[in-house]
Image (cartoon, rainbow, N blue to C red; front, side, top):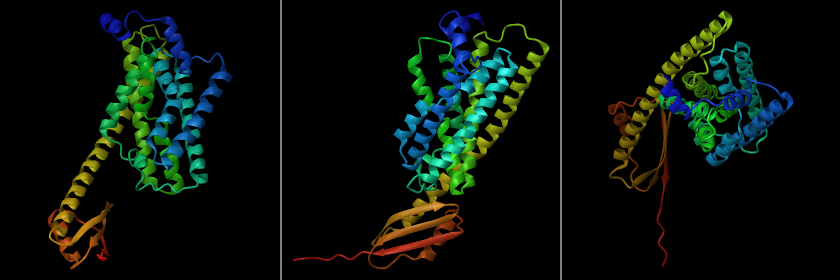
Length: 332
């Protein structure tokens, strides 16, 4: 395994980089005021930026928040502390992550409450992107977590850090949790929370892989330290199984919804074909279909559309049809 360690690290392990990783991950606390004040100030500002970006449906604003947010640091610190057999610091960094989560949740609720525009969770693309996590999100988080852990041990890849921060979305899902909680949409809040938990578990798995392959877990442990590390890794393994099952179910749900939407779109297009009407708006959500058609002449039969949808395998609880009559006026 020595050759793999050298390839991973680009040479021998640099003790100064390990010390730096321990400090940045809050495993080592030598300047508590400086370290904790920097962490919480950045976290609050990142939360304000991310929540405002979500309200504005602005991806670029949210990317800016990702670059500021420091919440990945204690997550990596937990993986590092577990690998080197420091159970108290494992618990402490995990606790700091929980406190950080609470701060993001509370601040995002406050920002959502005072922001001058309503956040429409049903149409906001930044919300929708974070409330239906899939297995692919786990793969992304694993890769980002692996690179983040590796970057903490190598001096020659600092340019990867911004990309890691963007790909491993940590704070924005928690902001969606707070915004959805305030708006009274528990389904969206739970979906975004699942995405955050997915990212956390993936970072623990990837971080453990990097730190152990780098040789950080080779020293002799006491019985308590060894048992504590085994317990933590067992908890991460169990959590990963639960996450995979939930993401699998969510992925199947997304596939089913996309298939149903495709059938609806094809059926509606065939329904208006041959008439003087066109589909100006189509919304399909929670087995409710709302259609607006615009044109002139004889209106296509809504009952016929309902039958066509049933034949296509689309069962609806509600079908709403709005008709906009258009008239052409010629001048001259």
